[in-house]
Amino acid sequence: MQTYYDVIDLVENIKADLHPAIDKDATIDFFSYSIGSLLAQILMMTNKNGYFSQSKFCMFCGGAVFNRLSPVSKFILDSEANVSLYSYVVEHLESHMKRDELLRHYLGDAHPEGVNFRSMLNYKCLTESREAIFNSMSDRIMAVALTKDTVIPAYEVINTLQGVKRNIPIQVDVLDYPYNYKHEDPFPALSSIADSVDEHFNRTFDRICGFLK
Image (cartoon, rainbow, N blue to C red):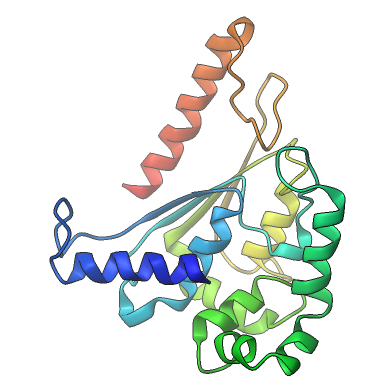
């Protein structure tokens, strides 16, 4: 949530013509990777002051709700941290909110960004409102998922973005590269497969850039 407010501060500086390099009338689009997609989803869903009404948003290896991720990895979270985090933000968040006035304030109805954050933590929480928002901006969202991604599986990206009934027309492209890769390293820097990695990196980002244009 702190990062959400930091991004909003940046956008408001741009809109006030206070940014030295970005025009105040520039359209702000988003490209996200992995868990960064959660932040960008909340920004787009909340659409503070209509800042992102025309924004496009493309996710790479991201887009699923938090409780459908599998982040246990030596590059991300160890198993104990994952259990603790899941316990706090999924299993017992409502109890924490009842006891903690500050948490209740920022995640409650007074703050739409907090409500949207909660809707992205649990697949079965606030599902109807989450899916209604995704549907309303479906033509401005795209996701690229990878077949062998076990951290944020492609089918969970589809479950979240296209909805329980698969009736949200968000484009989700599922790719599979012809070399060994994983979520944390989709484009390995290995000389033995460099040509193939370069080719599929370029194909992937040509697709992403084509959408954002």
